[in-house]
Length: 241
Image (cartoon, rainbow, N blue to C red; front, side, top):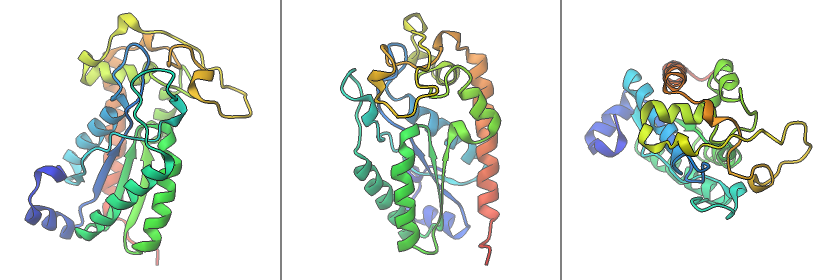
């Protein structure tokens, strides 16, 4: 049930059936010397598609640009939207999803700093479209177990064991483990937030050298199970009053 592969009649029928529109949201940014720049977008897309195959919901085209300003221009590869631009894009997508008849939109994110812009977009959409139900979730935070697994080697992880393992599982050609660099999370215990070049020399935070496709498969299965469960609950949920 991919939005871009459906006809207008099929989308109308899906909307009338109560299907959820799910938006995979990632980023295009440096992921160290060993991972593809599309890592976050790919993780979001794969998890959403697999979950929606179970639930029969509709997958919107992946939004592969995120708010990645913190990576700066220190390394090649990052294509960042400003916070205001990302907010506006998500608002526009939400308005058109609503115009097509859908009344539930779940944004499934795989890049940490997309959160604040999406939160602003949800506030605006909730005001403009009072009958549109919205939810923002991040793959790494779908369950407490996933949150712990993603942050096992670095609380403020980037291109780490978990992300590398996921790509080794579903797209190993995008991983170059021979180039992997491990760096500790230098932000632990600090008061302020810092741009990425002030926290890592390579662009990596964590231990990607420990990654395995087997761990990736387990993480992927857990994430898909959790998201499918959330979509099923969201589809059946009714307003409290």
